[in-house]
Length: 258
Image (spheres, rainbow, N blue to C red):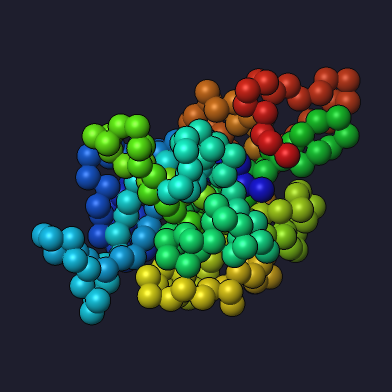
């Protein structure tokens, strides 16, 4: 699964890296080294531009940065709280799940990340690792998004949310966990974001061994276990010190889900 990641680049940097227009509006950029569900984060979408009357232009598309909340709330949901349970969607079954299949066909996004965290069980402890590009470039998680409106409050702003797709881990990642985010290579970005393409079944595959081999799997401090901790020290290499008599402690409400 993917339950925590880091996203520290400002919108201007991401706009250049993803060849997108910055439409984050009033969003206040900040480096987030411990992104957790329900946080507002930057995503990348590609849509047909609309005129003043809301009509889409079928002859052009615009790739842009948008701010969304992590944890997808389907448009038909009665309550937005369901989003906390929909932070991930399994690539193997996403096309058949009612919560995700509409978004898979019509509302796909990329989720830029410096890297993601995963926990390996070492005896009685859980050792956190940070998976990141060795060259410092952003990873692009395959994501889905949805817009939800509160029927009880017609004046409320619509809530735009996203989920991260996951797939079976491969290569060196299997030593840490059996699942991983579906990281898309640059050559697949356009096809994934294409608003006119409904069938993306050929893209719902595990990343290539070449992509995974280029990742650095970095052991980091257990400070990342708590969402209250957030700073560059979380992604600094921290070699584990075996201590079988002192299991790692987690804040109850912050324990990474398994």
